[in-house]
Image 1 (spheres, rainbow, N blue to C red):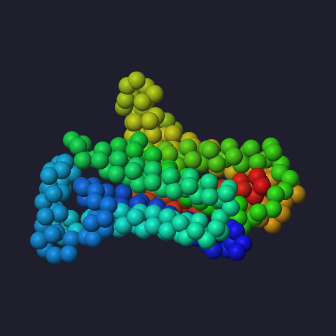
Image 2: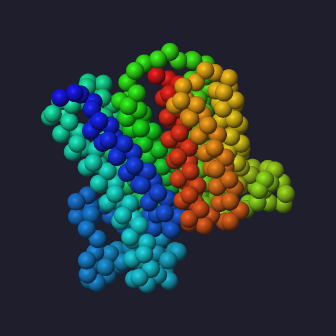
Image 3: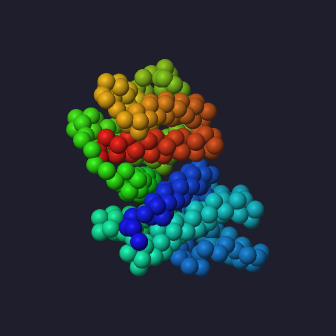
Length: 338
């Protein structure tokens, strides 16, 4: 049987769709403050939610032992707890399901000798990334089960960014199989798209910082911050030493996220303009055109999310927009790399 056949491609693309779904559910979990509702981690038995009132009561009593309930949610009744429990449970179950979707077909394709050696190596990297992502999820939750009922924004950023990177790499491996033929590449333009991808990943990290610090709920104005200032004075006085303002201060982190948004838009505009001057095939042309459209949509989503004080649906849409933009950037880079 032919190695790296269509079944392998469909498997990898299915993984991409599931990771995309996982990011959506993760966004809802974060924005509904559901992430600390399950305070233990049981790999097998944790897939089954409480099935009767006694089990729900026990789960609620466990939740009451932790700071989120004691400091923020003492007004919760059992139904309130069930509402937040659902999203965290779904997020964890989906993570386990994705693990199985990657692992079981991988073993099957290995046994049937349908994977080439390069694809096997790439897939092992994918499995390692997925395992690391699961560890980061629990490591993040653990940070919110101590005195301060908020997860570390650094751990949140690591968890979210790893999910995006895992998706991008899975998509890249699938594209390697969809487009196996090599071609001559424009090195300087490829490097420009690489730079665009790096800036986008940095912006995604800062988006996670904004989410983790709840920095989207302040300075809800655009294009200027509060008091009609481009750079509000709180940007550089919330933390000491001064550099901490830009990685731990709410105003500082939001300011960096704003500036990076302009840089991402400008970079993609340059990619689009320079790309139009090159002789492009259909896939390359589609890539740069979609980049331009999507960065405009994503920028608009970001502005609206800020102006409307981060409603859940719009916050999730903004996160999905980042995911779609990364997908297009990955596709475009691949088409200018191989």
